[in-house]
Image (cartoon, rainbow, N blue to C red; front, side, top):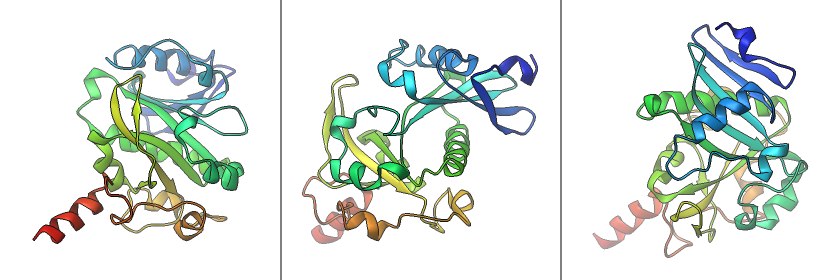
Length: 231
């Protein structure tokens, strides 16, 4: 199968190094159809299209033209975001034109234990969305992988805990801004990015967890502070 077989009128190449390709597409594209197949392998994720898929962009990563991982990105001006009822309204209202919401991250069974696949997909998805004007990503994250997202550069938004009714998991809303962070995996992606929104600007609208504000804060920073306090 060559690259042309992965493309159609509703899809574009985002990344291509030969053996790895990332194709973005809308509903009706092959990239979207392959994403549905990946979702079907997830125990707690429905393979059926949902309403958000109708106006979102899907990013599907292929290894040797075989789908390995996928995610989707939705913009508020396109329609209701996935789990929008749990997102802080002040952030959506203040930064609507610069906001994207990533969701439905999934990997095939073969690549489930390869974190670099996930990082590459997220990195190139971010790079493409920066070109489209997105400067902030909102995402819901279950507690079991929250520390991983923090290492990538995401921050927990205070007082956003909810119980996901579909996955039956504890979740918080997390946020990443294109503000350059030397320690972030996305440092090179955000380099030379203009019109950024800083964490300070976001804090003026909605507090981000610093480990002190929330008694039940799940962030790793909060856990470190609590350990120091106990000792």
